[in-house]
Length: 204
Ligand code: GLN
Image 1 (cartoon, rainbow, N blue to C red):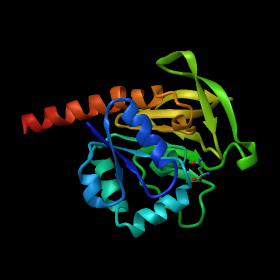
Image 2: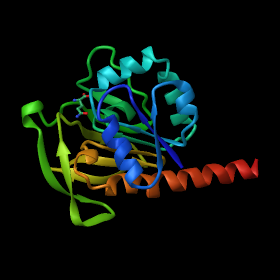
Image 3: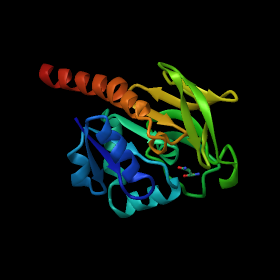
Image 4: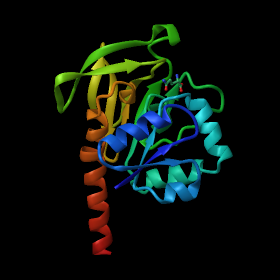
């Protein structure tokens, strides 16, 4: 399995390393041809407004949106969660998201940079020890649509969600050296999605 990391801005190297440590081929994706070469994509944390503007400049915005619609597994962390959300609260004027995930996300919901924090999370399916989660000017999920599963919450606000081939966290697992969130993405999101896609191709 080849997993790309959208490398326009943000925590690109850290995600690539976490993916490699999980034993998958990680590559950097900035151009449409590089997107064509991967089975799945990670959209890192950084600044969602910058990433979406650069995605337009690099002509990769529409190709990513099309791949999401076609079922490509995607994991969005922090800014990446915002970029996967169908609706964004506190967006800047004209801010665009790729969308696909039927949630409303509030940008900077936990406050400003100085309100960044770490906490231990109860994450559905990953226990013992709990996930140490780093939140940096993080969003939270305000509303979930049908079929969106909530995997973790902080003070009643969802901070990890999954819907079919799309997975998002408000926090940054690439910063802690604990690869269980990336492993979850590979094993629980990518592998089933890619297996059913190849089964569909065989039937065709
Ligand atoms: N607040 C940032 C945004 O709106 C996200 C911060 C992050 O990814 N750490 O994109």
